[in-house]
Length: 147
Image (cartoon, rainbow, N blue to C red; front, side):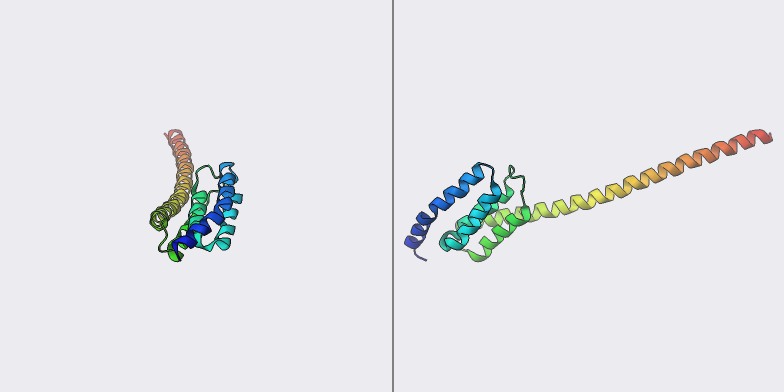
């Protein structure tokens, strides 16, 4: 791919990029992501830019539909299909961070389940302790009667 072809493809895609950016600024991240997805097919010479921007949309804190898995898929596609991209290095870093976040999220979920089980066990032990106290009181009362 020549530098000129990439340049002209970028010029042709500029209105699409601006439109996607406007959707994102307005908080319409789903439409912005769809726009970037369309650009990947329509402007293959700058698909890496569209993939990168789409990945960023999926991790944007203001995006209520934030989706780390979709972001990871965008960055991974860029890494796999566009090794010469200027966004490759950042995509590698972001993909690595997203893998780490996903791993930690899984651990948090597992620990949450473990906490729930432990809380149930504590409640059960508390009920058993109350029952033991009741039995102990009954035994003490019986003992007093026999004296």
